[in-house]
Length: 116
Picture 1 (cartoon, rainbow, N blue to C red):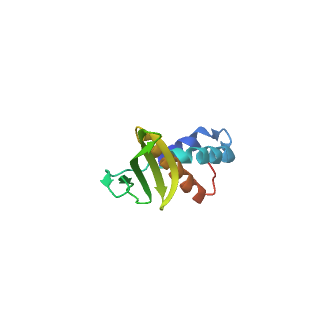
Picture 2: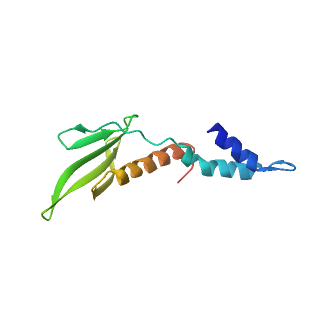
Picture 3: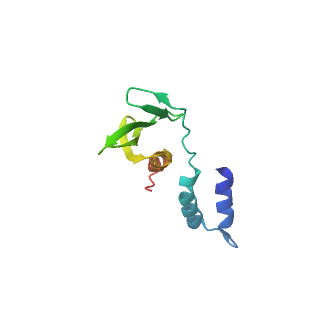
């Protein structure tokens, strides 16, 4: 993170010093990409289906087989502190994990007063 911020400040150097506002705007714009993605543990069986948890323990990804109109499919749900924030029928969990990471970044950025 330090190297990325130093690079941004260096890019905003002018002959009269540093373009402070430009550097600050660029740093703020770069912060979401500096948030480390969630790390998921392996799946555990539960009464609901299978659950993967993040290393921080706040996000859970659960999936189960659902039967809609005679078609069995996999339902992926992401929970943040027990509240469902994402739900999708699909064949893999990539979109659910992407949604969890987007929520994670938004939560961290909100702590800085930045809305994504």
